[in-house]
Amino acid sequence: MDLCDFTRKVKPMVLALVASLVASMLPLQVGGAAASSIPSLIAHASLFSKAVLLILVGLSVYTWAILYDRLRVYGKVRSQDAAFLQAFRGAENAADLRMVAMQHPQSVLARTALAGQRAGDQHTSESVGAAARFELVQRAMDRAADDATSDLEKRVGFLATTGSVAPFIGLMGTVWGVMVSFVNIGAQGSATLVVVAPGIAEALIATIAGLAAAIPAAIGYNHLLGKLREIGHAAGQFTSEYLDRRLGARHS
Image (cartoon, rainbow, N blue to C red; front, side):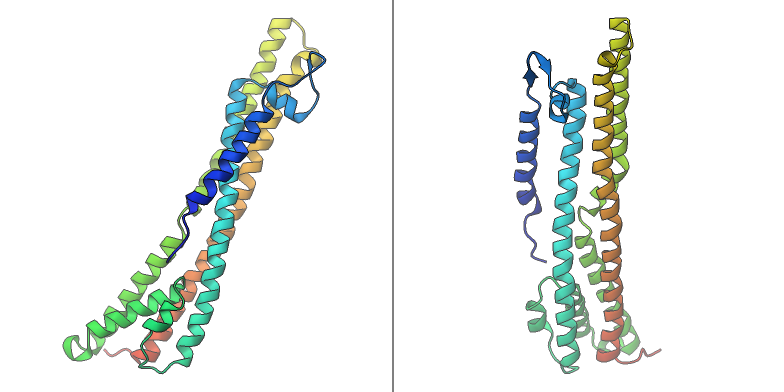
C-alpha cells in the first residue's frame, strides 16, 4: 500500500505545540507575584514538573496524530475493499484481477486476490493436483491478508503503551508536587495555604495531564483494534469466496 510518510506530517505538529508550551512556561509575573492562572502555575512549576508535562503533551499529540492517520487510512481501505469486492463479483470467473487490483491499491482484498491468482497460476492442477493447489492458494491468500493487516496495525501499539504508561508518568509528577509541598512546609515552618498551594497545584496539573493523555489513547486503541478485526474478518470471508468461485469445492 502506498501510504504517506506519517512522521513527516506529525513532527511539525509536535514541534509547534512544544514550542508554544515552552513559551507559556516563561516566568510570568504580575506585580512581583505569580499570577493566579493555570499558565502561570505551569510557568512557576519546578523543572521536573515541566519535564513531566512536556512528555505527556508529546504523548498526547502523537496519540491524536496516530488516531487521525489510522482512521483516515482505515476509511480508505474499507471504501476500496467494497469497490473491489463489487468488481470481483461482477467479473467472469476466469478474469484477470491485476487491472482491477491496480485501481484499488489500498484494498486488502485486492492484495489477497492477487496473491491467490499468482499462486493458482504458478501451481496448476496438473502439476500438483487439485487438493494441493487448493491448499497452496489458500495459504498464499492467508499470508497476503495477514501481511496487509499487519501493515495497517503499525503504530497502533503506541496507543496501548500510552494508555498504560501515561497515568504513571502523571502520578510521578503528582508525587513530586506533593513532595514539594512538604518541603515548603518544612522550610517555612507552617502549613498555610500559601505554602502548600503551589506544590498541590503542580500535583493536580500532572494528574490531569496524565489522564488527558491516557484516556483518548485507551479508547482509540480499542476502537482501532475493532476496525482491524473487521478488516481481517472481511479478508477471511473473501478468501473463502474466492476459493469457491475460482477453484470450486475442495478435492480430497
